[in-house]
Image 1 (tube, rainbow, N blue to C red):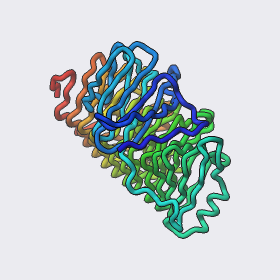
Image 2: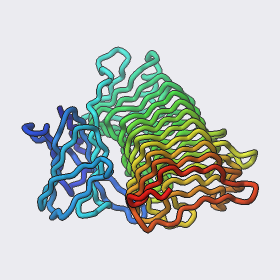
Image 3: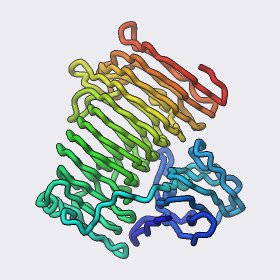
Image 4: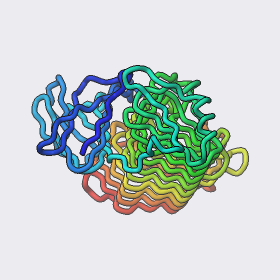
Length: 457
C-alpha cells in the first residue's frame, strides 16, 4: 500500500527530477511531488525533497534530464544499492527510510526522500472535539489566528485542530497552541507560520504536513516550533522547510518528545533542535540538514534558567552544512555558578556531513563547556560518521569562547565514546583539552573507535 500526498497548487516545487513509486512487481506507478528546499548558507543551493508513506515493499524510480554516471544513496548504513542507467535510477524499500539520493556526487542539488509509515492513529475529523480547518489545494487558503485559538479554548480538553491539505497562513506568523491540544497536519497540508507552546502542557503537533518558512527573513528569528516553560509536549513526523532560526527550540521545559522530524535550513543560527535548561527530552528518528548545529544542548540562556539533564537523542540522521552535527555545553548561568549538563546519551546516529572552517567550531561530536558549566555522564554510542568536507571527529574542551562566554567552563567528567565508525580521511586532529589545572577534562573512555575499517582505540 502506498499513500502519495498531492502538492497544493501554491507549493514551491523543484523540477530537477521526476519521482515515481509503486508496489514492487506489479503496481501502478504513482508520481510523487518534489518540493524546493534551500541548503548550505556557505553557498545556498536549490535541493529537492519528496515524501510518501507505504506499507510492504515498494519500488522507487528517479529520473531526470541529466546523464547519470553514478548514484549514492545515504546513509550508507541503509545498504541500498540502486539499479542505474543513463537517465534513471531504481531501488526498493521494505521499511521506512530518510534518504539522500546524490546523482553524480552532487550533494548540493540532491533529492532528500522521506519514505514513512502509513499513519495509524489519525484523529477522526468528524469527532465532536475536533476543529477542522479546511484547505483548498487549488487556491490559497485559510488563516490560522486568534479566532482559531478562541474556538479551541471553548472546546473540552483533549481537543484537536485538524488542518487538511492545502496552503494555510498563520496570522501575524505565530500560532500559540493552548494546553490539552493536538494540532494534526494532514499530508499535503502546508502551514506558513510558526507554532509556539508557551507555559502549556499536554500538547502535540503531528501529522505528515509541512511547516513552511522559506519566505521569512533571517533576522526575524522565527522558530519552526518553540517550546517554552512547558511540559508534556510532542512533535512528530512534521517536515520543516527553511525556518530562519531553530527548527525546534526547547527552553526550561520537561517531558518533551521530538519524533521523526525532518528539516532543512540555510541561514546563520538556523540550528535544528536546541535544548536549553530542560529535562527528560527524547529525540528519536528524523533527518536534519541545517546551516548551524543540528542538535545542541545548553544550560541557561535568554529567559531559560537551570540545568539540562536526562536527554536521549537516537536513531536520527544529521547533516551539518555549517558547525556541528552534535554540540553541547556553551551557554549557562555565568552570573551565578553555571549549570550542570548531565545524563545525556547519543545513540544509533548517522552523520552525513560536517563542514566547518572556523577553528573554534569544529567537531562532529563536540562538548565545549563555557559559562562555568559542568558536563558529566555523557555517552556517544553506535555513531556512524561518513566522509565529511572539513572538521574534527571529536572536540572535548573546557573553554572560554570570547564570542559567547563571559566566563570559562568548569569541567567535563565521565564521557564514553563507544562503537564510533568513521570511513573518511584527512580530518582535523581531534582534541581533548582542559582550561587550566582547576577546570579540567577527566574520565574520558574510548571503546571500539574504528576509522577507515581499522580499530584505532
